[in-house]
Length: 224
Image (cartoon, rainbow, N blue to C red; front, side):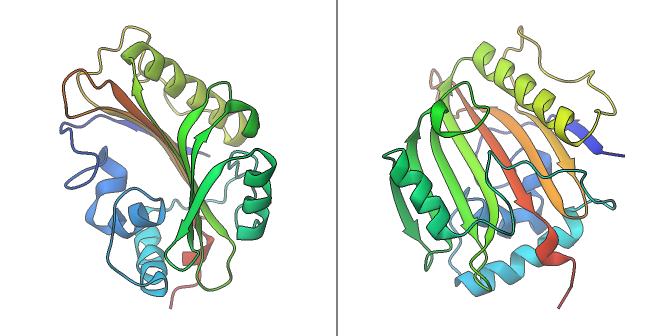
């Protein structure tokens, strides 16, 4: 059965002490770096090892029935594949961390299968060991509370349709969500972690930042 949950926590910093519960646990900070969330001064190999250790604590106990990742294939897609996709959609992308991280700005909905709205940034994380896709993360900032709420709900519904029925939906944000605090919908499997979060920006009047993440947990199945 899907391990599905919603967490609300306080705090307004996107990076630092907490990114909405699950992903800002101390064990998850290397995973955040992999997802393109926060800068970490480490080599790609060291980051990959830290990520594997983090995923041991974060992953679930059963395999996912599917592993959607915005049309990309975790553990299979390569940097060359993503660059070809970006070129086909005339996207501005920049690689870093020795080509283990690629960020593309201003991605239209038409470039992402199933998307209905554009996103500000899509970040792709690749394993240093084999160059295969380990994560896809999107960030969209400046949304209204109602727009963010609608997108969180729609993304959660899409994920539930693909990987299982939610255990409870009682704490999903509604159209009346006031963005007083962040919200996270997350799924954890032995080979896959995914979710969507919405969080008010720290500066008043800057709106809400929305993040989606899809990551393989297979890299940590065989511990070192």
